[in-house]
Amino acid sequence: MRSLVLAGVLALMPVAASAEQLLKLASRPGVELRVLTDRPAGAPRGAVILLAGGDGVLSLDDGGQLGAMMGNHVIRTRALYARAGHAWFAPDIASDLKTHRGYRLSTEHARDLAAVVKAARAVGGPVVAIGTSRGALSVASLLVKQTEALPDAAVISSGVLMADRDRNGFAASAAGDLGRVRAPVLLLRHSGEACSATPASDADRFKALLSGSPRVDIVTFDGGQPRGANADPCGPWHYHGFPGIEAEVVTRTVEWIAANVRR
Image 1 (cartoon, one colour):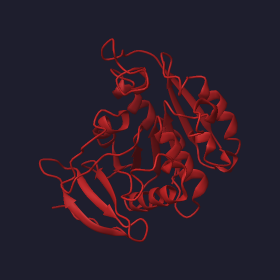
Image 2: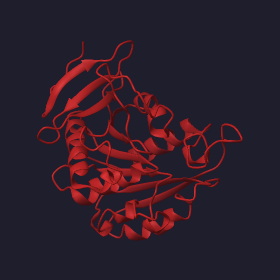
Image 3: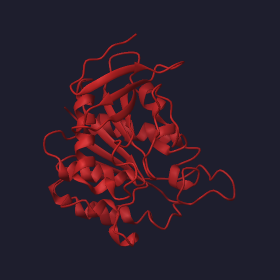
Image 4: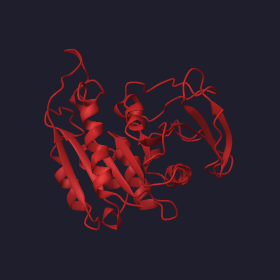
């Protein structure tokens, strides 16, 4: 069995019938944070942290099996990152935050993600946080609320970016002063986006807030199609989740990382 030595890891457990492994991190006192992870067969080029949308709850069991979010864009494409040479880390939500709707904007959640960044650093190479939909809030919180452990870059796809789209203000723009972000950022969107919380035009508005970032790129995708006439416009099987063009999205992402992110 492959073994890893990581600061703050309480246990490392193999996942049955898979190369994926379960990490249990002590991200805060008395809190357990479960993280599913895998790495490529050869030396990794770096690591990506995959932050799911929706409520973000993966419901990882003791064997590292996913109980939810299997269809989420960054979760269902996780193996593609390993094939492209990147180790990946997909964190669940910490045990004490799973029932709190506004947890993504909390300092506690940012601390949890910082613990994942520290674990990812052991891989070597750059660490990039990748969030989709409401995962954008998690990316923004990490970038503006943490200084101790930050990723080298960030990628947001179909992000809930602007607070005026949500009556409760739960959006990445509400995380804090985004002008403080010093990492390169890639924003991914689909021209057919039909979710009212994540219009494609919001990427341009959000880019303007990242005034301190050395580079902010926007990539617009076409193609693919919703899976069925009743697919939820804000769900993973509509253009929001890039169905049918997953490999293209991952390829463009890892190419951008290779061209723009150094460690």
